[in-house]
Length: 312
Image (tube, rainbow, N blue to C red):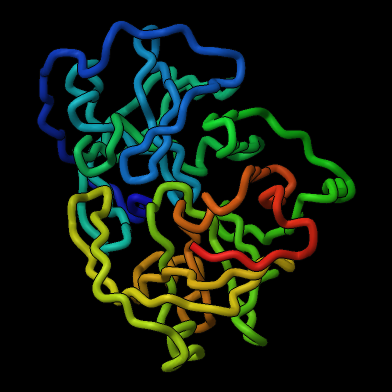
């Protein structure tokens, strides 16, 4: 979550329209599943998104963000209409931002008529927009780190949980405001709630988890995170052992501890919880997030025949 985006309150106020040259090379055709190479910048990923008849433009898939966001610069290029102001909540707090009306957003099988999206600066997102869980419902995101590619596909609701292969860990989640929250995770004997956050390069832990761990973690100094609104968060970094997720053990897990607004938003401020960023996700070969079935699949490294323990 380059910033969890939660729309709280709207008021009328037109944003400034910026007119700049198109920021990308001539567009390439979309593939059926929008397959593309993962970006290396700060462990982010992008997919090609069309708006109306123009594009594609590189958008980040952010499973930690409630709302889709468009870059203010891109809104200016396309001459998008103002949608007024909203209050948004990010890692660094709540602020008022402009919105824009985005017509005909399309990626893979997703087709949106008009969405009202916060308009933020591209440099703070590392892309020209972010796809949030508002457009990812009824779809599944598959991140293949071995092949360095990502697919976005429609998902059909099943009556039962599909079993995983011998090298897969399958966990189910509950949904809060459309966000999937996994509870099959622990630090030693303490249960941890987990949000999968593909938009964050680092893993964030809350104050309740820090209190449970106490002094049994190694300090590694401050960790700085910049939100989608451009504000900076400085968190206390620690290396944590004895973390498990679906039977998989982790050692030397870097966690940045901070009591950020998204934990309160998802009612996780009073119980141990983490927002699992790309640093932990990259330990797996494949991660698949199925919003329709509230299911997440992790494919472990080939070397892990037995329930493995591995560190960052």
